[in-house]
Length: 409
Ligand code: HEM
Image (tube, rainbow, N blue to C red; front, side, top):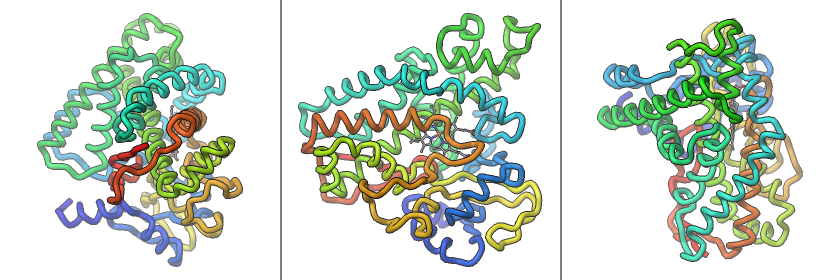
């Protein structure tokens, strides 16, 4: 990727909405070179793709926007993973990988983790409440979801920062243009995280506990006669890939939406005041932020056969970018879609996906966002943006959020 291509990708990532609007209004599908994919932009077309997983495979869902060079790949070779995970698998394999994830995120499992999440959230706010100002991204949004997912998986709290840091580095390496030296440093951090996860995999396989790490390993390595034996190297790769995907899916997204939710409430201060008066609107505010500025703007799919979508003929192997973020701004589905309005009547948005790959962690995310708004509206109703300058969005299509969120009260 040359400098100009980097710049174009960066611009698209920071503000994809004008591209979406053009694609929704165009006939058929639009090919977007920055994404190297056909952009599926209309709500009805996005739903059609998600309803037809046999024609639109998820094999390339995690295909990076930036392909690392050989030196970086060699460094990554010292780590673990590189196996299909739930989000990038299809059919029977997908069902096998998804079942224990859904079980691990069952309503009772989520309910059990809520008190822990509420305590951590209150503790984080205690850390800055008396100060009168803080960067809510760094001091809150980037911290809470990592602590919560770490707790659910069964990580020692002391290991959470390394695991969370590795998650960010994986996102940077695969989705943002960087110099090779930076890529190499990111790869080292990722490998370190993978070795940490591998210690958990082996330890919990030998001595299972009542945590998600143990139950995922038990479900996915159930081999009957050889259960209890040491894991093979291949199984360790598979387990680390799975845990890493779960860890990343569980915190990067929720951190991103926490930041965007607060940002849009601050930009629409009257709606923040309304929320302080009427906390019963909190769930609606969460849904509106998820619709209006979806953290996961889209994922790729690849066709398994020739398909006609929206009048465009796609051959086998065609890559599409399924833009949930665009479907959520489609005027044929949502009235005044470009307006942020927490009082709008509930409408089904696609921020958590739809169909067989629909997000199994949405309830856990919603609980954390609810707790966040309940605490902040009660404790810091005077919250507002600290600076006049515009808040810059992080350049990414999969964890859209402010870079920083300097607030004061
Ligand atoms: C605001 C927070 C979140 C958002 C916006 C979000 C969004 C999504 C979306 C759009 C998908 C569908 C992917 C596809 O179509 O290929 C998805 C899948 C997934 N999400 Fe979430 N998610 C969030 C939070 C979470 C949490 C907290 C967890 C775990 C604790 C989680 C775990 C997963 C997993 C494992 C999948 C893959 C499911 C499959 O492929 O069958 N997510 N998420």
